[in-house]
Length: 235
Image (tube, rainbow, N blue to C red; front, top):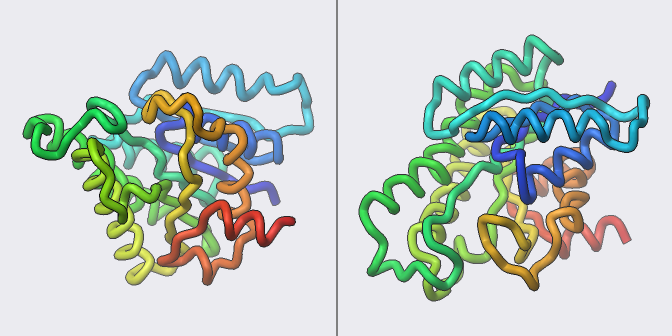
């Protein structure tokens, strides 16, 4: 049976690329994001991939991960549309400022609060609201990066939030039956990071698909998988 996949922050960057990869693999993919118009466009584009009737299909709705009730309704609707959820990608995130341009000592309280509410609490709420609708062997993936555990200048509240999101993933991994872990794709060029010389989101999408479907569950659960593990397993 083809998997049911739910992705937050799916209208651009990594979320969008992973959604397309799963649709091409035959999955039912539920996409969400803060911008309802962008969600509608994403669904239309995903359902038109190559005009191939053998690929999966996409469905989506507007979701703000800062609002747990949005997430509750989202996962309820995904389960009604396609049954138990096999994969959750808690991808939605914000970066007020930009990489190297947000010194921690200059971060405004309002920016810190919104970053943590989206990137850390949002991950917590995403996983918590997905739990009642997960398949028995479901996997939940939290994207992260080296900034979560290495000191880098100008990363401000974003770095703090990513460290917190990883801790949220480990906490759920310790306490629930589902496999919950972190995937680090390295530097990726997205609207969030603004890094033009980094990898394209499309180039790392297979890493996420592998982690969600083929990587040993024991390696992902409470763990951290990245490009090295993926390349080693698939070369």
